[in-house]
Amino acid sequence: MKTLSLSILICLVLSVKVAMTAEPQLSGTVLIEDVTILSAHQGQPQHHMDVLLEGGRIERILETGTNPPSETIIDGSGKFLTPGLIDSHVHLGHNPIVNRDDAPVFEALNHAYRLQLPRSLLYHGFTTVIDLDYAPERNGWLAESELVPDVHHCGRGVRFAGGYGPAFVPPQFVERVFPNLVYEPQHKAFWPDGMDPELYTVDAAVERVVRSGAVCLKTYVETGFGGVFEWASPSAETLSALAKAAQENGLVFVVHANSAQAWQMSVDAGADVIAHGMWHWDGDRRGAELTDAALVAIQNAVAAGVAVQPTVQVVVGEKATLTGALLQDPRTLPLLPRELSDYLQSAKGRWSQRVLLELYEQHNPFADTTPETLIDVSIERAMKSMERFHRSGGVLLMGSDTPAQDGIGNLPGLNGYLEMLGWAKAGIPLDRIFWSVTLGNAKGFQIDNELGSVEPGKQADLLLLNRNPLQDVSAYNDIAIVIVDGKPIKRGDLSAR
Ligand SMILES: [Zn+2]
Image 1: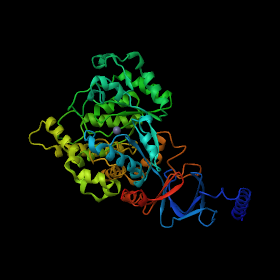
Image 2 (image 1 turned 180 degrees about the vertical axis):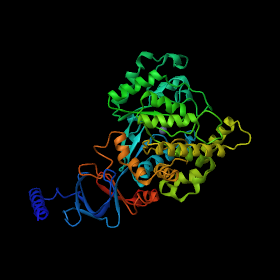
Image 3 (image 1 turned 180 degrees about the horizontal axis):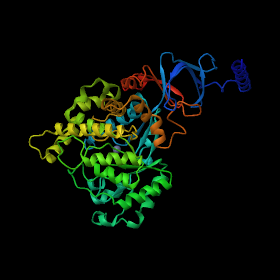
Image 4 (image 1 turned 90 degrees about the horizontal axis):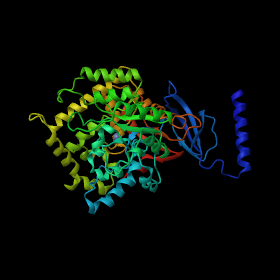
């Protein structure tokens, strides 16, 4: 009786509101009827629920049968409503497909790539992305698209002269390409002429990140991909100072690290998130067994409560670029406008494959080991270290590092899906994957007041799946409808074809 009278009361209130303001109260409302809700904040699926969306938010969640009035009604029976997915490691400004040096075609193809990019992310259900090295002023092109995932970011990454990034460009361009440097006296020899070190302190770097509207701060500990290169890396003091300043400013402190040594440095500095899995350690590059140093770093990361983005697609995608296997994969078709697909199939379009092969030829000291075998070792290491970290009680966050490198290996959208397939293959339980790609990422990056679960008041970024992703990881590629800011979009409408 109580429920009944309450619902009558709600109806009355609603009808009064509607009567007072002609029509707008209901316009734009969406009702998803009789759906099973999957949300990591609840232990169990909620069957036979109605979810009302209004003004871009989840307005109410009711048991099926109460029939609140709504402009649009979606039949959710037999389907699963989940939060929109969050990929917490992307790079939106980097076009990996078209060769920048290919001037005659670059502009048109880059435009085609950028128009499809946000749609490809949404096509695979990623309604929120976190860009770990982002310049808002350089990404105005995103606004050209009508449908864009929510973008959060770390502002520009904090880099070091002679280190990962700045070491790749001539000194006169360092400031322009990597504007958020921190000066360290021990790397004075690499410091570009004409830049005043006093303007490049830890506090100044954090201040720049805060001003850009970031939720996190990213820095880099990369000595050179397991001994292939030799780059300067920051001192323990600088890293700790960055961690302290970031945390004082409410920023999540993220550290790029993919070796046992760099993981350990990140843990010692007080990182909140390590932005990569582990696939480098001292010793023979051809062995995949976790060494003692790797095991200790994993154990210490678990004990310190540092979250990890395994980014297995960095190494899996490298192999895909080298072999070109993804070029024949039908799953790439919805993500590639025809002109991009034609370009990739052409001799010119295979530039990244050639560049990668040359790099391996220059830096492979083993006459009896092919580049492919070396990458397979990295993949095996990444899978084993992820599984070990998880099994020891470590917190995984789903970040795909899209795109980690040039080539077809990390196609936006598909790359995040392949990352989740990789986790499942390594033995990460499906409920862990689901948490990591929804509520875990939202909590890890402090955006869970708005995102990450299906709860009233949260942003209406949701997915309607045909199958249950807690039973089969491939359900993430069986999306019926993507809901962005309360607006339902059929998945097919996001396809490039
Ligand atoms: Zn990255």
